[in-house]
Image (cartoon, rainbow over all chains, first blue to last red; front, side, top):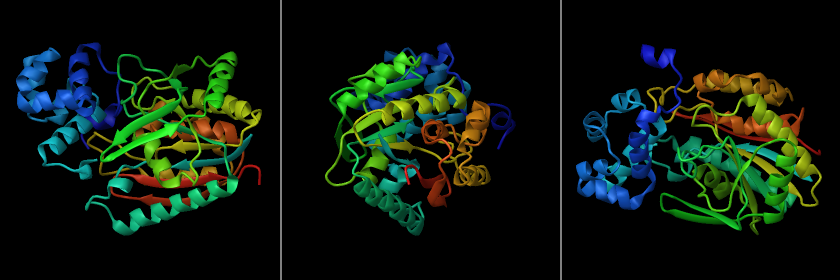
Amino acid sequence: MGDRAMSEAHYRFPPAAAFPLNRCLYALKSDDAFRARFLADAKAAMAEYGLDPEAQAALLAADRDSLVARGAHPYLVFMADLRVRMARGTGTFEYF
Amino acid sequence: MLVGAFACAHTPQLIARPETEDRELVLRVHAAFARVRRRLAMLQPDAIAIVAGDHVEAFFLDAVPALAVYAGAEAAGTFGPYNYRFPIHEPLARAVVEQGIERGFDLLYTQHARLDYAFFVPLHFTMPEPAVPILPLHVNVYLPPQPTPRRCHAWGGALGEILAARPERVVLMASGGMSHYPGTDRYGSPDYDWDRRVLDTLRDGRGEQLAAVTGEELDKAGNVELRTWITVLGAVGSAKAEIYCYEPSWHHGNAVVEWAIGR
């Protein structure tokens, strides 16, 4: 466990600046149509929610630490990643 | 009247059963759920009021209610391959909203929101035959700032009084817990010792002490979802808990509990 995890809450108030990112993660988790668009053209899908280039890069790399540092909710990061993996056929419930 | 009170884990792996799980452990939790199901058959409730923390599914950042009541005709959702749908006990839902607000709890109510697996997993395993209507009650556990444990306990106290005055036989069920840290870098190391101390407290009928726990402590212990239990504790007072199981998996403290009320 790093210093960050020791010193800060696991679940933190989502900063307003991270709303586009959290909205995109929520849609990947819960909106089948959006997830399909993301799988077909991730950049175009992320542009729908106005993600900045850094957030886009972090999401494309599925870089949890970077996403959380940008204000993404850890549970949304987790579930968005799971749903995308499941849709690609490379993930199962075991990622819970 | 309130005829029973339980708390059940809603760990998704208990249904999905991936290869990462200890099969025997999963089956022991299933056996505890089966005990709850038999108890529910004996108690013959007219409704199950289930207190759960939505996993940022029905309630996203559009609007974040601290406490909410599902007051539609039915509630539905999906989980993996499962599509589920439960009728809601509408007179009970309406009474809880109206009387809750009358008592000073500024509740959100919804007639449309989706149910997520926090509600579904315990009901999947424990719903008796024939099935009874439910009353889903949401407590915000994942989007800070969450309601304080003290507020959850007070809401549970009011809820218990509202249900006690109703003609229907109602079972109260908390969903969630115990220690786990979904999405974080601590997913593989839950705080089992903290869980066991809580269970000792509940076994002794001293659950009221949990009203004094801080939100910070719940977060640290991987027990943000324990707010649902603390809500139920407000309704059961000093009733002692019987621990049906406590099964710590590699990522989750799985507990199933009944409080001895009316016995």
